[in-house]
Image (cartoon, rainbow, N blue to C red; front, side, top):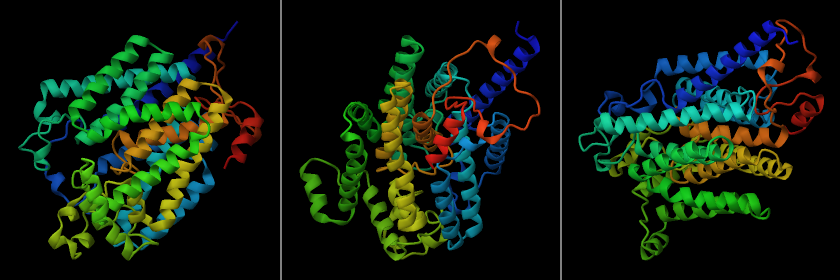
Amino acid sequence: MPDGRQNGASAKNGLFSSLLFLTIFCYFWIGLAPFPDPNAAALLTAYGKSSNLINQLIVVSLSGIVLVTMFRYRSAGMLLRPHGLLAVLLLWVCFTGLLSDDPATAFRRIVFAILVCLCSSAVLLLPRNEQQFAKLVCGIMVAVICLSYFGVIALPQRAIHQPTDALEQLLAGDWRGHFGHKNVAAGAMVFAVFFGLYLRQVRSTFIGLAIVAAAGFFVLKSGGKTSAGMLPAVLVLAWVFEHVRASRWLIPVFGLLVVNAILMSAAVSPAVSGFLVSLGVDPTFTDRSSIWELALSAIADRPFFGYGFQSFWQTEALFSRGEAISSWAVTAANSHNGYVEQLINGGVPMLILVVVWLVFLPIRDAGRALRSGKDKALTRLFIRIWLFSLFFACLESPFFGNTGPLWFTTLISVFGLRFQAYASLAEAKPIATTKARPARRNWPRPQRQTQGLAQGPTQRLAQRLANAR
């Protein structure tokens, strides 16, 4: 007969993990201050001088709780994989940070980025099984969508771009919900569509389709043309990626090369720009070309080391450049291209490391997960999010955006594909059959067990993960 005390301890552990999962998700998807004031003075503060102490304290606290929890579950070794590549990336980012105009600010942001990655890699290890994961994600998506629609109805001056906003008055009428900008809202709602399609398969057809419909309509009303156009395209590409093995390297690698080549050429080549005009395409891509032209000029000056992690845009160094007189692009918050942004941050070496981490390794992991044939719905979810993030980054800069849902959810897809490739899901078990962990015990390393979507209770799994570094 099961021990009631053990059952109670197990239930408490499950409740704590669920609350931690919800807290982390809500922090990134809703934030501490939803519906930000579009006329706040902070919007006009240079990015290089802005800082939010409360956000930093929250992330530090969450990261500390996550680490303690992972050590309790004996899952700490599964965090932030692959260790070797990420360690090299961290060393390079720290080195280039020393060369920036403001090393202290660069290192503060580096630490913040590490903690965000830590939370993202841990969040998938918290649910006991896929059923609990789906249940928690369902609740979060419903809450996020309801909150955004509530803002549109009850707080339109905050949830809809207005002609009286301090910045970007031309966006008036576009929905942004509780997010700070319509592009973030559009990207987040595309992710919500993917989650809805996943929930339709594994939890509830009605709830899943309702999420898809509500989030899809919000994407259209946000005016996010990039997200709206990419949503159906990514669904098709993800299907091809899943069913045609020969396409698994072709779609991400060749696709990204072609798209970025066209975009960057349009910024510097009148011939390419004229060709796009003849096709009826805006060659400036809503005036992003001015930003790319400035970014490419800056990269040419420091191609190998870059300017330090998030230490270029909206800084005194940029405002003092000659382009400050002739181009509005010096006021941009980022390069509006995630790959160009890495060249700005850390030069060619950083771009190579980031591409290996976010493009090449997930291709291999996704292929291995698909070959295993297990948990196809979850693998499909991660592939859709991952592909959308890669192509979305051609026109925006979501990588290492340490607040908001875009980078956090991208990381979930990257870490999730790795877990899917090298581990298996835990089967759902009644609480009555689950044994509580001893309060204090030195578990031998080869017998390390893990809890969550990437549960692997044998030495064989630990060895496979070690080989996958």
